[in-house]
Image (cartoon, rainbow, N blue to C red; front, side, top):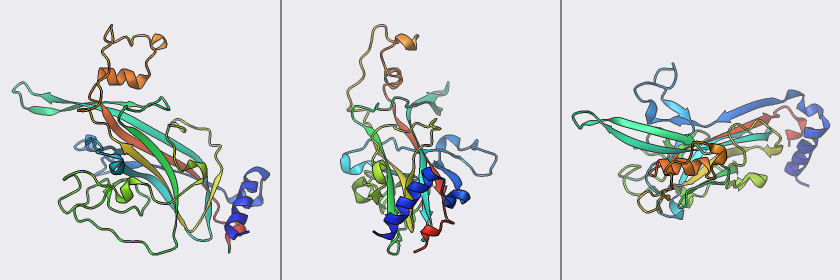
Length: 293
């Protein structure tokens, strides 16, 4: 039996048997956050220059095919050799966004009014779009490949290495948003699946989840990362929602058979995916003797 298997078995036993190794337990929650143009000019906090928000904005440009899905790194943790952690909880969030340009009395652009709504139905998605989440483990067995882009924008990164929240892209000599978006590796999140959490096709762990009953050990050295993959809808080609009679039968949610997201789509036919967000609750055990080779 390998050292990793022994450690994993000991870790699982420690979670239920009150092992003395857990006297040094430390809980850390990592939450995705990235720059958001909605906060430019007003700021998001008292910190100078801060215009970030929870989650990562999804570009509005529609996805052209399966190999060009938006690859977004939400959050992650780097684990050194001789240490490990236990994934105790996950949070997932997706929003819908509808924008309306506003004009002044002189007919000049006066800004944009935004409606944004959280997706609460676990299995809802656009007919021509969807979001998946992926918890991956990348073992550090070789030196990192350095990727640089002088045209890198805030909230984006040309490298799959790292733990910060960012839209991951393949550098384009003309710029990130010149031509179609191209993700590295055809948009497949790098690394191995972390047990059964490798692919989540639904909102299995909603944002208001407080039942931290997961117990998935991960041993270093390496990086554990939560990813999102987004197939952005195309408002120009998707089938429009039906116009119901009466046009807005949403006064009594208990009597309405439509999901909240379908109601929002009917009210705002041009809405798209707005933001994706994720969080990880990690339990660290750097002082366990089992972690030593």
